[in-house]
Image (cartoon, rainbow, N blue to C red; front, side, top):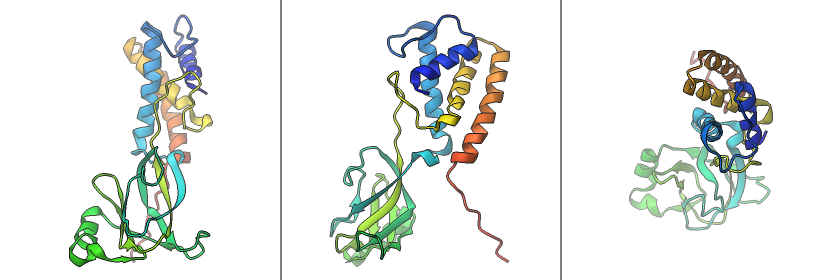
Length: 224
């Protein structure tokens, strides 16, 4: 469903009088529905700390010798939100046939090792990676040649604006937006039966979305 269709579905499920034919230039109840749908979408995106599977993308770029710090803009990724430092690997070959994993480090640990004394100047094949306080990727040691970096990153998804804008949530789960928006309508209208129905359906679809699209968490086995 696109943005307009989501709003129309809220009208339908809520038994709201009238109709909506555009998400722009609205007033009153229609504008509230538009706002509720957009807010519901953004809230769902943030529910997993922006770590849904559908927000993950993969890139391979070539590093610049002598440069160890990169922003998303530096790498030609204008819609990057966060780095997945557990996915980083480097290679000399463009085929990645010789790739090796980078060991992630927390920034304080990285700072106290790779940004300390003579280690600041070391140039070689990168071994570690981190994200600094400016959300920049830092590599240690600094690459001494144009290695290829393969990595996953999280998309910064925009709000819904136009009638035909489509949410990034997979189509089979998009009703989760409708039910969350409808809950707000029920609260606004002080309609407990609408709130109860919306909440019940929202939880059901949200559980399905989480099971299908939550980023995989691997639990370690027993120590003994």
